Amino acid sequence: MVEADNRIPLDWDALEVGETFEKFEYVLTQEMIDEYRRGVMDTEAAFPTISHKVDVRQFNARYSDNGSVNARCAFHCYNSPVPGKTLTVTAWVADKYLRRGKNYIVTEAISVDEDGRLIDRVITHELKQPWEVGKKWDG
Amino acid sequence: MGRVERTYAEGDPVGPLVKEITQEAINLFEGSAGHSEASQFTDEEAARETLGTSGTVASGRMSISFALELMRRHFGADVFNKTGMVDLRFIRPVRPGDTITFTGEVTDTSREANGLKVNVKIEAQNQKGDMTGVGSGSAIVPNAFLPPDE
Image (spheres, rainbow over the protein chains, first blue to last red):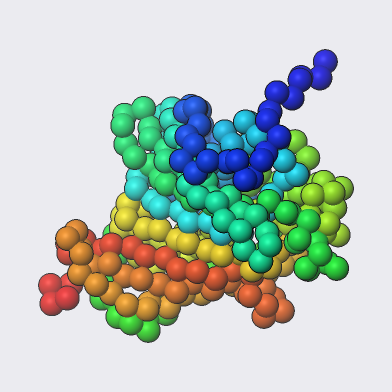
């Protein structure tokens, strides 16, 4: 059975900077950390949270669009997450801008663990016309 | 790597760090967060439909992970994992089969309330010498991690 898509079609003009999404929680398991470390070929990689794309998760759950491509990303480290702990993520729309006729949305998120330790902050600029990648580099 | 005690000065090289990108590595990266659905990162057809590219690409967040490693190796985990940051703009797609070299250079330092802030320019190039990412990073090194005369 196919689940109904209850997402709202994205209206970039109407999107409000500051819109904050419902918090969500997940447990970061040792298995997730190990798989991430194999993926990035770094046995000491401390922030597997980056692969969870938590800053856009709630955005993508609320809005439907034609996809996106990551144009810029900033990542701030505060404390390495501990396996088995529940992480709570708060994400919001930090900015939006138009550059060379293309639409960008900036999302931001902070993660805090169940002991109240601040884990990280991630800020991502997403280009909302992802086909521009193919036009520019595979055209 | 844990505690590193060293001096920091403008022009200091950071890295390099070399990574060979494979589809398997991309799949592990995506899978580690439970992203099992076909995407521009894991499925050629999805990449064609979404990006218009001939094949898959690596998430920019993989490049962020590599930049974090570059910086952590320079500053030590004790410092970087608590005070570090990276900020990259993605210039070109990174694809399976690419070899990406991350390099950095200290651009300046400044005294902060909680230590010495060290700013680093970061670049990533593929095997053809084309820039795939450019940006910056920083870490605040506590005085306890600096030599006494720093």
